Length: 193
Image (cartoon, rainbow, N blue to C red; front, top):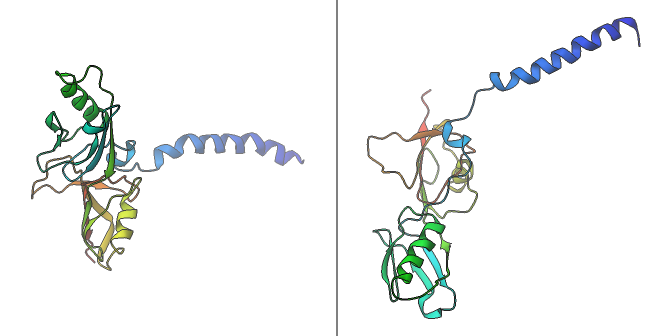
């Protein structure tokens, strides 16, 4: 190595180190909704569930969450599962079974069919679509036939299926890699030339 190359070596290392430290500060962050991990799934109307009460076949079966967020089980009747996680639903069922029916109920709840998600606006085929695990905004757009020529691919908003939706609420801006959940409503906005 020549003398010039040896003298430049510490400078090059310092520049590389400085670049690595400053890069996260220079890259804009994604919207807050996509920085979080995948949100915990909350049950809602339209979900089809398999409830298993171990050792009690007559109490087990497949049930659909009704419009009020309840499932109707044999013996114990209606159980409110709206906006609950699977573990919370298991606990709610077990608590009702403990009330004079079983001594130590072991309950398992699984989702058989998720409720659909909805996509509106500047996509070729707006409407409701069946949810698939791990779905992102980009996957949802592909299912809806892709963007129209007027679509603003950087202007997509989301209403979570567990949030109250009003007609004057614009939703939360999201990136294409944001996780979509059952019941979510996506809107792809029009771009202005």
